[in-house]
Image (cartoon, rainbow, N blue to C red; front, side, top):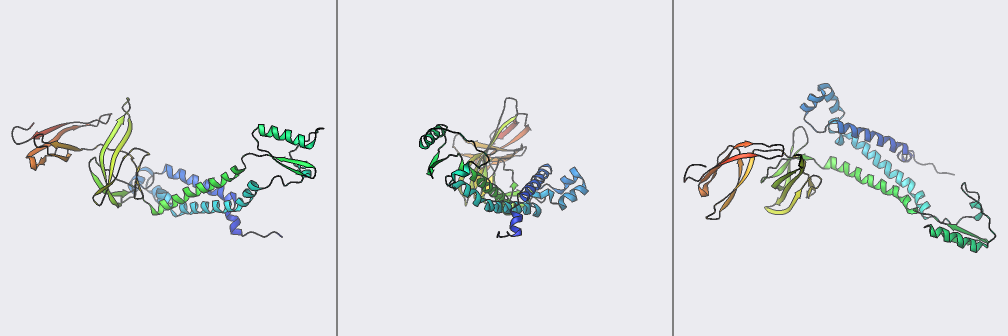
Length: 337
């Protein structure tokens, strides 16, 4: 008597459920790509109008990947994969490890795909000749004698049947990571001018909620290179992580080569031109030097040296990202230059 399976188990073991859930997830992801996520309400109203914006927010289309229904779909798909894997693994393992030589010789002739060849040569000699041909073709043939007959069996890639299990496990890792990241992680951004540091990032939500970091991130240098056509080629930021007043990590990051620290990942996403400049002044006689943040068109003083200076006539950036500016300087000993 065949034991009836639990109806809930059968529901999650269904391939149809997997296809349906996957189709809905794919369709939702298309929507999430078309509708920019976590933007201010006013921006959605400007693009889609107030009525459609309210509908999008009601359906959580503006923050879809953290919505309850998208998370539910991910959980259902994960459960479906787990149950399908458990349901089918015993049969896959049986096929991979089964003794294919434990077969009645008469059964071979009844298999759907078979062919009969006759020879006057002895059984042992015929089996050896066939085995030699299989070995030469790259097949590792197994042999067993039984009831005056010799059975040969050869196959390739038996263990590849376990590949589907590897695929399922990989998908589970991705989806479980997405669930954990969307509900227990955060995504934000911050602009760090060259030479400045920050311990705060701002979330991609309407309020741009600030999140304090357990360390400081300093941008020591920003560099951009260009193609001959003038198009940007590479953005590179030299970052330093400072914790408790001590430098703990330094890394130059570019697009798709981020910095990882304390479970937080920093990506180089974009750059913006700024009127905030950096200047390093050095007294050649005493060897003293100092570094200053220099806003354009503001006077900066170095009291220790009795020096004042500033930046005027800032122009740029040009198509190659270059700036032009004029620096004035006054050491109190003559006319400003």
